[in-house]
Image (tube, rainbow, N blue to C red; front, side):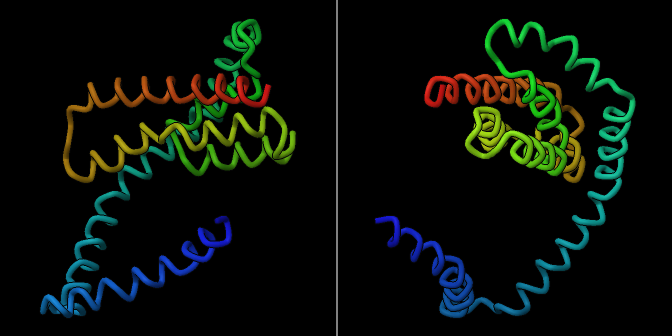
Length: 177
């Protein structure tokens, strides 16, 4: 079964790449012209995202460089230790809603330090997969399409990140602990 899934996975992307132009040609869609028109729109979207992306990167850098993340981590760590959550994963919970690349780098560092089969490595990997880059999504994507009122989306996104963090920790502790 594992070999079948691996083989299907290896062939799925090339099959999709071949299928889409063939299906478009079958439906008499001008494939190349449609592709270049989409690429032009994508270029405009990329240019529109840049100011939001730069603003987000500056805010993240200021947050980390100011020591605010370290101060928050130090303040919350005794409480987390009391309820059984490893304090090493707390910075990941704070970083994940801000930046996907930064949280991935932090997860890689945790795995490098503690090992892939360690509890911290498992929890960090599960957090990485069960939470989202909420503030990045709100800033970049909502900014690109001009959505200004993000109050409810922000609350729901951060709440789901907190639930994802807690669920990841407690499920890992329950299964592997």
